[in-house]
Image (cartoon, rainbow, N blue to C red; front, top):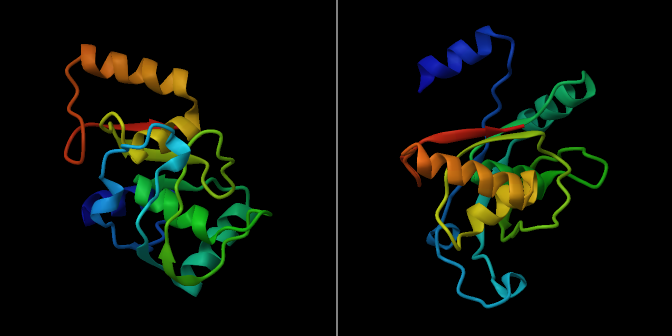
Length: 157
């Protein structure tokens, strides 16, 4: 909510808004036997010049990039180059992130607990490691956390 975003900004964190139109493909279960054979459907994204400039400024000043949501992760990883520089872009992405993907743009992720056999679960496993994520999921199940889009969230540092 806007209230929460204002509180975050008061604590010295910058908020950078980007656009990604999530399609059904983001939530489609992986049916391929080998995860490498799964294909993401293209989704529209836009990172404005001001957003890219702010991300790069924060990074230059030693700040960390926290992505709120896996769709934000996919967008930022689409527009960052091999040197960690963000670029303003608009178009479609079908970036599919799974282990052993090397992240260049994102330093932390705030996301929900995702369903098995989902590209979203693979993305967080690529970020934090399969063992750590599976331990976190085991604990979440034991403690009755809610999963999926309107469930509980975790911050992965």
